[in-house]
Amino acid sequence: MHRIALTLAIALTPAALAAQVQGGARAQSQTRADAQVKSGAGAQVSASTTVEVEVAVARERGLPTQPIRRRAAEGRAKGATEAQMAMAAGRMRANLEAAHEAMVR
Image (cartoon, rainbow, N blue to C red; front, side, top):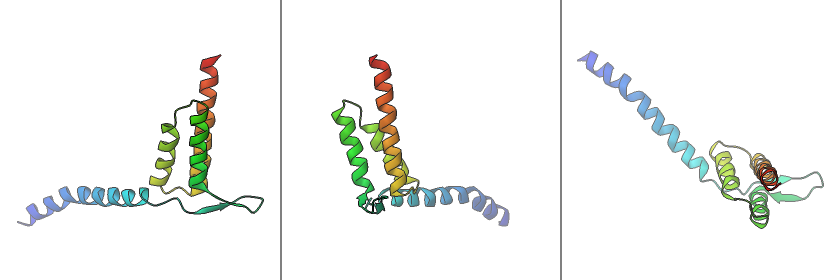
């Protein structure tokens, strides 16, 4: 009897832990990007607005916008700061521009 109970406990523990981790990641990914980042000049800029600006610039230049949005969502899911997400969105847009330039030449 104890052997069966121990076997069930060992078999079900990883599944229970995985469910907890997935639930926590889902909760983090749904948080809003309302934190503000102070720039060197003292102005406050919302990082989510910065991500949206990067998306708008990419759209204006004929680049795909989904990779930028995915990168920001990935950062949100991993618990990155708003500043990190904004920087990642800017790097993604720059990479997309460079790839576009290379293909157009």
